[in-house]
View (cartoon, rainbow, N blue to C red):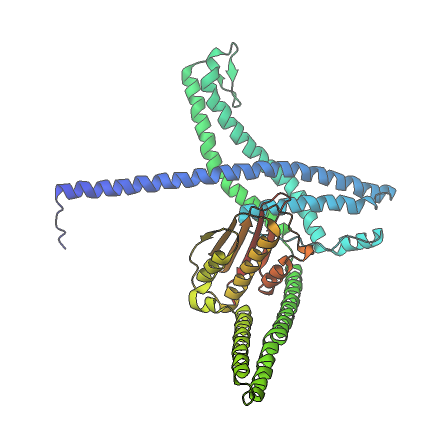
Length: 439
């Protein structure tokens, strides 16, 4: 096969393109390496601090164990000592969760009651054994990895700074490697050692941090049986909440139909009956009664449409969740800022839940917050619809006060969703809801 020759200009352009792509990809890889280096260094240094706390906890547990075995006086201290281990393990769970981008649940059985009850709970709780295994393991490996990270970081900085100060120090400067710096050549060598320490840190620390996080997750995550029982309990609670919310919704619809639409339709029937009696005696009064019956029928139709709209807003079918939220923001008395990315059509139940959650949040902000601006953020990931409503009001929102927040949480719980409310006194108030898309 004969390959036609490229013109010289084309060849030069071709090789420039390849060289540019190679340089760009190389710099991209270097940026990725440096981007992983600092978080890994920070994670291992913090792990060294928690390892010191774990070592203190292990020492305390050993003292309590000796007191129990030899003197028989340490039993009352056992629950408090293990509470300290639990707090430290929960701190590590949050740290591992941030590193691995996941949530590790606290798998503990409640620790309450008499001393005998607490000791029995601790003895039969699988999380106790896992915590003890982790605290011993972390007190050794976490401290070792933290010292390695600290040594590489400090040595990199120290060897690099020798270039700046060795020449004006009266005494001979000796590095940590035992090298006496007496000339610029040796100083440049120290700079090379500094760069070597940085390279070693960038190569070693990210895998070490990932290994520490994964092994800690293996020890601190709930056991399979515990996780399954917790999930069953959560599903049972969310099912009960869904049934309660469904019952409340049915009673509200029945009340609206009975007190509103049904009463007005009954009034129309009575007015038409009066018309039948007046048509032969007073035609003008009959026509006036017909007009009144017409007005009453129109009011009944309007109320019936409102009831239907409260079950499933027609605007969701016509314009989707994006358009429905835009319409809600337009009708809100408080100026709204929309920060939405197009999310497309979602399951009808999810769209309805998201619509009513946003509507209730806007109603709460209008009635209770004293805000001048509300921001509505709406976006979707592969499996979740995320909603965030923030206002600049005076804050202090509390679900126990019955301001509609309980209903919002129940709607989210019915879909196994998550609700997070942040409302310090003085504001701002931020409501975040995550609804799973898979139905």
